[in-house]
Image (cartoon, rainbow, N blue to C red):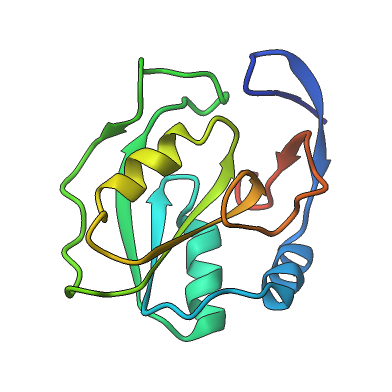
Length: 144
C-alpha cells in the first residue's frame, strides 16, 4: 500500500498487525517506569498497549507537528492542550508511533524535564525502538 514518507515522497507501506506489534512490545527491555505518557494522536494506541502490558497508568500529552498524511502542518511541534500533571519524580515512558526527525518527541519530553524519562517509539529514533529494522512507512492497524 503506498504511503508518504517524512520528506513527502511516495513510498510503499509495511503492514503490521496488532498481534505483531503486541508481541514485539512484550519482547522489549523497557526500563522501570511509573507512568506511560502517549503523544496524542499517533501515540495513543501504542501507549495504551504498553501501559496495559506493564500494568501502568496512562496519560496523554497533546503535541502535534504532522498532518494525517505525514506532512508537517506547523513550523514546529505545538502543544495543543495543557500537559498532564504527574507526581514529582515519576519515571515516565514517553510513547509515540514513530519518530523521524525527533522534533515532536523532543518537544513532548521537554514538558517533563523534571522527571526521569525514557522514550519509546514503534519505528524511528528513540531510547527504545520496537521495529528498528523498518525504515519505510507503516500501515498501522488502527488507521484503517
